[in-house]
Length: 275
Image (cartoon, rainbow, N blue to C red; front, top):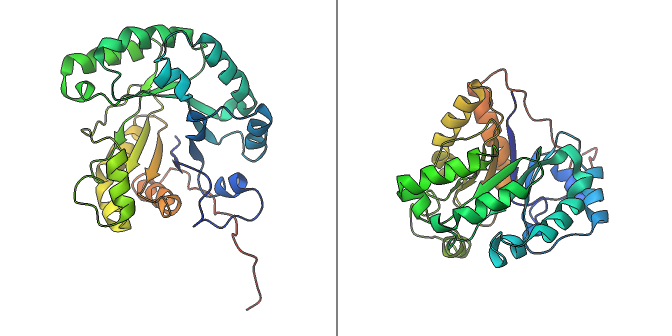
């Protein structure tokens, strides 16, 4: 039984980090979204340093480059996929899932392209797919067809829950920007595999964020009792509080599931003094 929690990044101006930033982050959270790979494929040496700064149990959920998902729309991208996976190879077991985030225009009519692409992913590599076309959330037939495509290779469907973000008008520039950029879709809470992945987006107000995640606490408790191993990512409009909130989420679940192993104490962020 394991619950992993994390954020959309491992460095933030609000998070003092002595030494290696990823190593410091990994003492707070045991998972992270690899969003930067969407924009550019890093050098293999950079990925090697990611592995050196994290333990083998740390979970990277790494996003495929937009050249594959948004420009080629999963077609004719075999060479790009191989290059990307070769670059990520140093992560070893830390590569928890290959994250395929698809554009909002990628709808039910594109499922053949998704099915064909998934057949090219090497066996043994966990895959997590995030869709944003409204039909997958409102049309039961489209929902079922997508689940069948994912089920053929044991892939997970990643929900991005922004219902709390959009529950009220923005009260800050960060909330306004988040509402202008994030998808506004119905909440989906069904897991397809033993390793569900959830992206939850809250508000500036930490207590509003906490109040809004109650359904996910209940669902996570249920998954753990079923023997699943979920990963929950916490987002806020400016993400300054997301690292602390991720740990708070883990603590809340731990109260309900006492046998859940707690997160380790984070590393000191400032030198200790005598006074």
